[in-house]
Image (tube, rainbow, N blue to C red; front, side):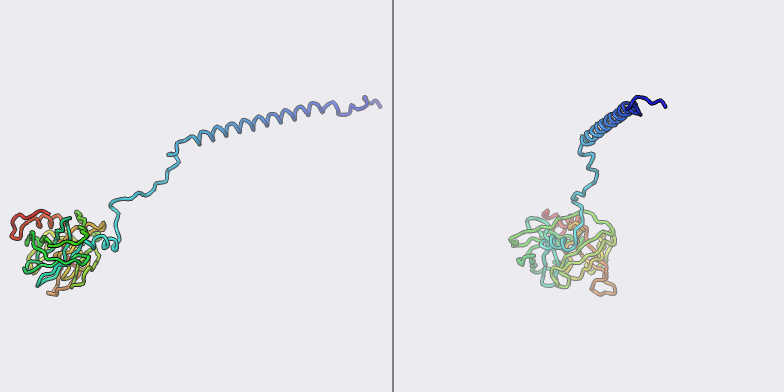
Length: 267
């Protein structure tokens, strides 16, 4: 049997196989290098975007219309509320100006005699009637002496049915009492022992005799009305779930009249 030269069995095919493997390896390396380059370019583009494009989550910001809790409203407005006494009546008032002017209900001081006011810090002083409007049942007082720290209330604006309100006053002589409720109606008319009054805010926060002249505040702690009366079915002089307040704009306008109805000093 004829045989080829010694060492020739399959040896001639190895160089071509080795060369093919090397070509595949080089191609694979090139592909990897290209992919790495593409990834690097994409990463550079993404990192180069403006930071604003990434901040898409909104964040809350403070607002001046935020509602306050009843304790906070009381703490803020309480120092502005005063006790008003005459020889015949007891009521409430609220400081509405830096000079100590007090806004109250006219029927609280209408009986005449000496008027005494007690401020939140305990300071007591006599007061005179600076202006009054019996048709609106509002009056302003000028105290003879002021407390060391004067805290006028912040006066508000309009009222909406269903809005939360807070009343601060001295019902039945229980000083510095606070109650809360909602506005039940607007532009109401009330028949009282002191006359018939119209354009009133109706609310259901608890008030009683002694509350008259006190502030009605909204959920931001702004004075939106002056408490003047309550509904008393069957002649019972006690709270029945309905109170009335003069809107603050009307109260301030009426308080600009003198005791006899003539133009008086401005607040």
